[in-house]
Image (cartoon, rainbow, N blue to C red; front, side, top):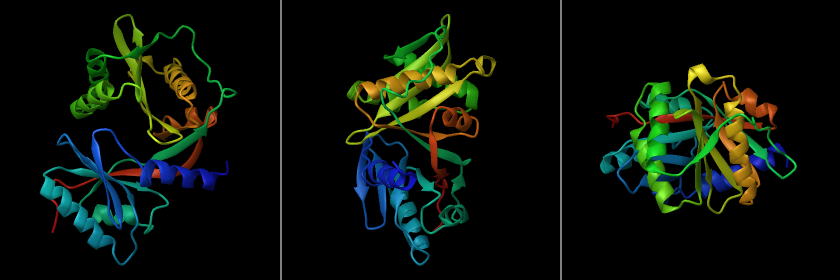
Length: 259
């Protein structure tokens, strides 16, 4: 599939028509927003703005989520309009997270990933394992991921066949972890996590976790893998056949929106 055709498919399935577990999808003339049904942060996943209405629509979303009493992320893709949408959001007080690369790969039985035979990759299916993942993330990134842990455990309980989590262990210690969502009504499986303790990097754990998640997506009949990759992860993904379709920015709403 050509790059532009693939980007359009991604945009339709995982932005315009996305349904996220635990969220209420709301579509207006200008945005597709997702509102948490559990009082957590929401997000704007797709927008259709121009130079004339961008400020007005951004203010409407700030006011909307402010009335709900929760913050939200506005996910900006490098092909979104207007071209400087990220800068407009920053001017309105949004915090712009580091740029990531939208990576996509078509998967078939003919695209195996190398698996490190000595790597002890285990599927994580209970709350204890998920809390170990959260402790790992907290350790690596030095910030709390409790809300993520609550959401992962809730999603695993409510729809166990759409979320699969995996970890690499050194004896009883979790040292690397990742998970995959098999997106509903979509040909894409989305990859998340892929975090490893510093002392265990360079041992092929990222690739092992990539391999087992790709195998699960293939087993379930998915056609594509997608991931927002950090600068560190992108070279590994490109080595295995992923293509960069765009760049993404997580733009976090201000705590006290301006009027």
